[in-house]
Length: 95
Image 1 (cartoon, rainbow, N blue to C red):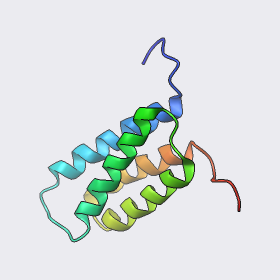
Image 2 (image 1 turned 90 degrees about the horizontal axis):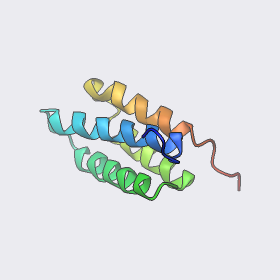
Image 3 (image 1 turned 90 degrees about the vertical axis):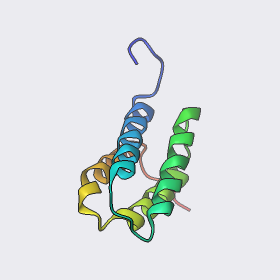
Image 4 (image 1 turned 30 degrees about the vertical axis):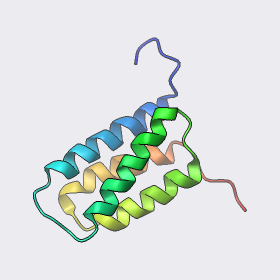
């Protein structure tokens, strides 16, 4: 959004999540973990609304989404875009 104070990382994640959600909704094939991917994408979408998503939660959601749709080649580009957007937030703190 032009003239906004929005974090560009949040904007990139919002765009990537929205795109993958649309692609997943339009994908005709059912697969066993589709519900997991849909739930986690909804969770990511909710996190970006706040404007300050938690990095560990972002990474957990990304892993669940990748595990759920990783073998669906038609969704590979959208998944890659979400991964790239999550990586903009950096690494989680070391324990």
